[in-house]
Image (cartoon, rainbow, N blue to C red; front, side, top):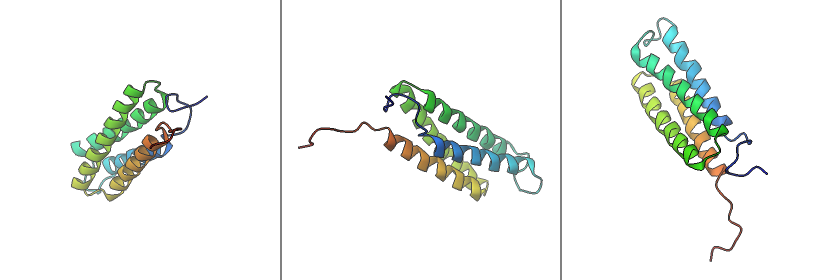
Length: 122
């Protein structure tokens, strides 16, 4: 029986796809000459942030504890917002799109694992 407290459902696939897409875009911008941000510390920080978001997505999927999963979701959301802000400052519009995908996936992940009410509300 797979419920909201057990891993096993691919809840985080959209979030992970956005994080890996952001990682690919950030790595391309960091390594490719004439992108405007190649070799800068800010671009390297964004590459690291996208990688950490992807790792946190995997940990959310594997976590059994709802408290730990909630903390990781908070950190994913914070990382996505701050990485999107850094992407705005670096003028990397595709990276902003990737972080929006991360946020959409995070919202889907949170709403898909909410406990279902079986009784009457009134």
